[in-house]
Image 1 (tube, rainbow, N blue to C red):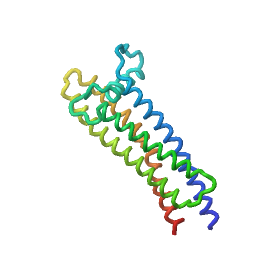
Image 2 (spheres, one colour):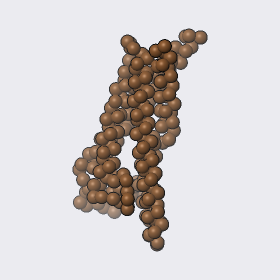
Image 3 (cartoon, rainbow, N blue to C red):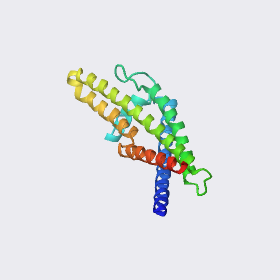
Image 4 (spheres, one colour):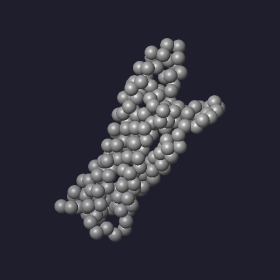
Length: 198
């Protein structure tokens, strides 16, 4: 029985560690790209989008990576606020990657402590993702209400809301599935760490 528990613990530890490293690295890259694009500023010449992806790129860039102000009235996650969130994501994901790498080390002096620290870092990442999603959801509601006031332009403005905000919302929620997996792993690692400590 004890050997099956140890094998399960090792498997969960590996899954958690690799999830943290892979997702943390992906978020590091996205955060760095967003920070660079924000600091670089808007382009003076923006050609007409020739594809749907170019259109989505333009909408997201104008809504979140442009520091010229609000894309719609009362926008919470403006370019400057989004820039701050990207710095926060950058640092929290560095912490998550470090704890994930520590989790994957072969020899650990205090395994329970590493498990608990990893779970705290993961809870922090999940909490930040949740806050980002809630703010994006509030912004979507405001954008959608503005679209309804636009009359004949409503459909075009609705497209901006959906393609700009919902795309970023799904990414921020890590596709929802990964966010749920991260939360389950964080609870599991916390319980295992507490069990090892006692």
